[in-house]
Length: 187
Ligand code: PAN
Ligand code: ZN
Image (cartoon, rainbow, N blue to C red; front, side, top):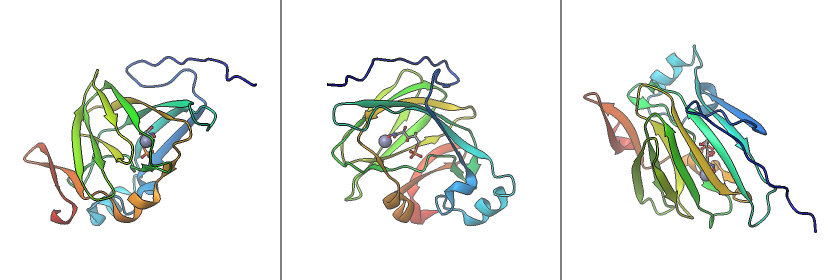
């Protein structure tokens, strides 16, 4: 039997994993159709800002293995809607995930296939559990980088299609200077 050798990484408040195996950068241009305000999207697209960076240490995609990744979600808004990740279900639906807040502040938005929505604030030191079957997305509600660690089954795999097509039932916007969760059709 071939054993996977143990390994580790270090990160600071900036969220950069050392070492990391994979770095993913998502710009606004990679997120067409994700934000409610299409006009605001188009005008910000001229700058095509970086929305988030992910540093990953994927383990072999086998049952029982875990991968970990840090995400640095930058501050900003498209219209009234805060910068956020694409969000996904796990392709292997019966797999959960653990999120740990490292710095900054934001919201973890979760939704079931039936449309039930849960949101929770994440700050430094928050540990949040995303149970199996819940789609999940993070949103930066602060003025600085929102950084967190995610630990998930290595064979979970990401299903982005469902969220890309239908989105979440609720979106997080800034109203009167504060974050407010509203129905996506209420924008
Ligand atoms: C996280 C996310 C990461 C980026 O590591 O993959 O925050 O978000 P998107 O994958 O939705 O672009 C995770 O949930 N992994 O399973
Ligand atoms: Zn996930």
